[in-house]
Length: 334
Image (tube, rainbow, N blue to C red; front, side, top):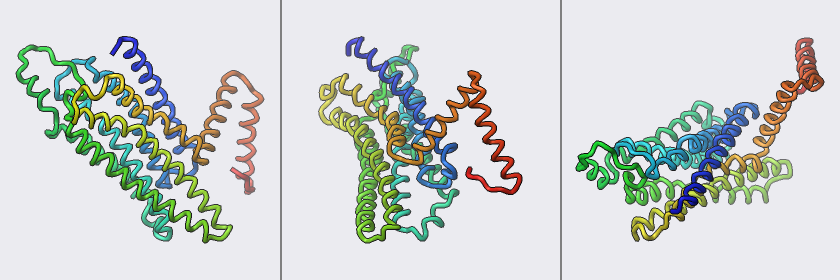
C-alpha cells in the first residue's frame, strides 16, 4: 500500500477511536445518570455492556489494529495475546446483542414471569457471564489453536530480535473462519434473527387484536425492538465483510484480497462501535431525553464558569425552592 494510503487509514482509525470513546462514554453516562432506575431494566444493563465493549474498541482494539500491522516487534506469545484482545471485544459485543434479544423475547412472551426472572442480580450475573464467555472464546488461540508456522519460525530464529507482529502471523485463518466466524459470530446472529422475527410477528398480531389502550404500550415495545434490531443489522453489515475476506484468504490465498480492501473491512468493523451511540440517540426516546439532560447540565456549568450569574441563581434558586417545599410537607414535580 502507498504511504499516503496508509496515512489516510491511520487518520481514519484515529477519528473512529475518538468517536468510539466519546460516544460510548456518553451512552454510559446517559443510562447510569440520565435515566431514572435504568439499571433495574435488563435491556439498559445490556446496552451498557455493549457500550463498554464499543468504548474498549476505541481504547484498545483500534490502537492494536494499527500496531499489529507490522509496526511493533514483540515475542510471538505477546503478539498472540494482543491479537486475542481484539477477538474478546468482538465476542463481548455479539453476546451483549444476544442478551438484549433474549431479554426482549422473554419480556414479550413471558410477561407474568418476566419481573421474577429478570431481577437486577440475575441481569448483572448475565452480563458477567457474557464477558467471561467472551474471554474464554476470544483467548482460545492461547490454548493451542494458533498459527504454528509463526511459532516454528521463531523457534528456529537464532537472532535476538523478534519478528514484526501482525494479526494473521499468529492467528490461524481456519480458526478465524470455522470457529470465530461460523461458531462465534454467525451462530448467535442466526439465533438473534429468529428471536427478532418471533418478536415482530407476535407484536404485529397483538396490535391487530388489542384494544386502543394497550396499543400505545405495544407500539413503544415495537419501536424499541426496531431500534435494537437496527443495531444488530448494523453489526452484521459492518463485521461480515471482514469475515468474508478471511474466507477468501483461507480458500483462495493472499492474492484474493488486496491490502486496501482488507483495510477498508477493518475500518468498517471498527466504525460499527462509533455508529451505535448515534443509533441510540436517534431511535431510543429514553436515551434521547438523557442526552438532553446531560447537554443542559453541561451548558449550565459552562455558563456558571463564565460568570452568568442569572442562570446560576435561577438554577440554584429552583433547587432551593424545591427543597423548601419538600421540607414543609408539600409535593413537587421532580
